[in-house]
Amino acid sequence: MVAFLRETVGDEALTVVCSTFEDIILDEASFDLGVSATAFHWLDEGPALAKVAKLIRPGGWWAMVWNVFGDDSRADPFHEATKTLIGGPSSTSIGARGIEFALDVEARAAAIERTRAFGAVEHRAGAWSLVLDADQTVALYGTYSNINIREDREAVLAELGRIARDKFDGCVTRNMVTSLHIAQRLSP
Image (cartoon, rainbow, N blue to C red; front, side, top):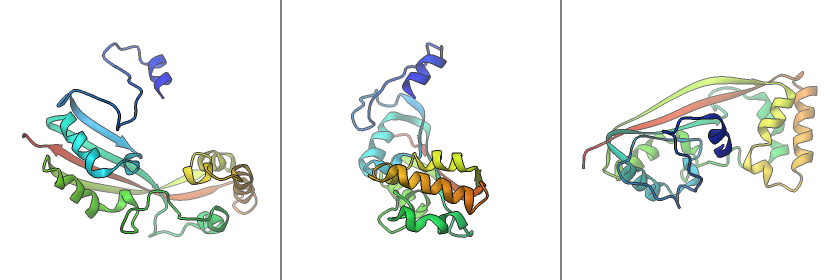
């Protein structure tokens, strides 16, 4: 992504820095908006939110968004047909209470509120369907960390493709939920 941004955005107002969130050193109160897209569950939430609070100017906004694969309120035939093949948890981001990290609204709000730096904490979620052909299904599952760590990764992906083609006529529908948590930075 760093290379893509540097090659495609010619505006000198954009500075691209390649670093981990934990290691980067940025000026305090230097951002009006901070966004984490499908990644915040990888961080130690308390210290990470404390760092975010220091980086966002008073009146600025913090947003965390995830596209969650699976929606317990709707049937998911492809997941049911492949869960034995994939094995393990259905998500790599199950939180401490056994709830998908992004969907644990109470825990996310409590963590944000513990910083005492944010007000107007809100959550919004929307359900939608992702429709993929067999090749797109394989490409998507090929990005999952729980697939990428497997020694039999290629065989699993090939079998996912076969199931998508043979049992679902090359048309896989996955139920999705987009979960958005937002909060406004208070004045110190």
